Image 1 (cartoon, rainbow, N blue to C red):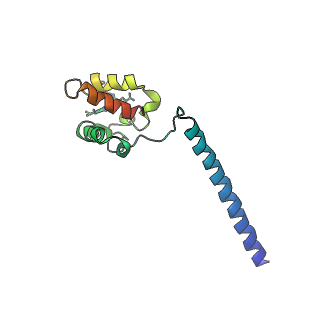
Image 2: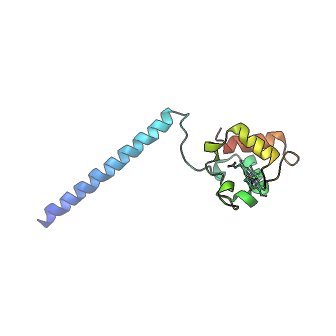
Image 3: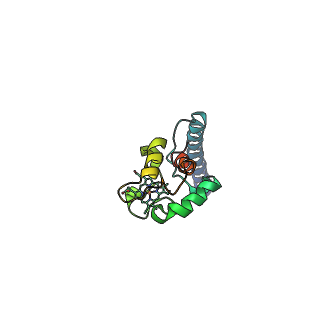
Length: 123
Ligand code: HEC
């Protein structure tokens, strides 16, 4: 009896795990086959090009935090900013600033602003 129970629970676990694995696999192939589909993965600084990482660390980290979660509340959370702002919006925000955020047009080159925006908009 005990052995049968153990076999049953092992079988359950195997079925459970394979269901989870197959559904994950499907998700993975969906995103892979459709490059346009945006995942909800947060933007990561370590995935950015080196130039962008140093710009962000020098200019943005003080208000937007190393993990982009923002140090001044939800409005400074940039983790999924690509969902609400386009590349052009982000270029405009960095160039002209916001209510609190200072404009960077005199501090960064156009090319530096463009590469930050490309990274943040996942382009
Ligand atoms: C002095 C603090 C500060 C610094 C430095 C700063 N920001 Fe911001 N940022 C903010 C605040 C605060 C907001 C919210 C809008 C506002 O009130 O200005 C914001 C908003 C943004 C937004 C728009 C978010 C939204 O949802 O509309 C983007 C994109 C952004 N910042 C990118 C950057 C980048 C890139 C840098 C570095 C070049 C940077 N910020 C540097 C404070 C800062």
